[in-house]
Length: 176
Figure (cartoon, rainbow, N blue to C red):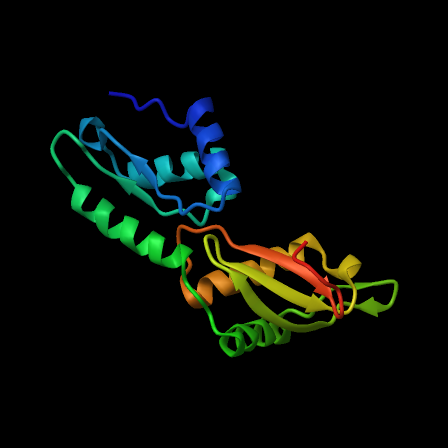
């Protein structure tokens, strides 16, 4: 049997869940009906992540609802992702990770001006949302934000949940 892969509807639903800040698990059903060869699982994972590139943080599980294969693991994973989506990280631990990340990869410069990250704090959960105070928001490039998100994710194990970052200049009010 051939699996249908990621459909247009799957992409739309996944995009809605991601934008809404929901915890996400990619579940592939009917895995028992697939003729497997060496590398089948990895090849299929790669295809799915290629189509859902913005969901690389979402764990993928291959199950069979018919036979019950790995369905018990699904419930464990649901609990883990739900806990990650509501995780609170102390300001001191967060800033320690941010400072270590800055030491490894310096913030970007533009026309001789360097981004300075003053400090970070967690503003909310569902999804974990962090406010990073900087000297100049225009210097806070998307790629460096993505780097910091990856550092936060790897240090705190935030598998299955989107992470939001809001940059603010010192003295700026509101969450925007």
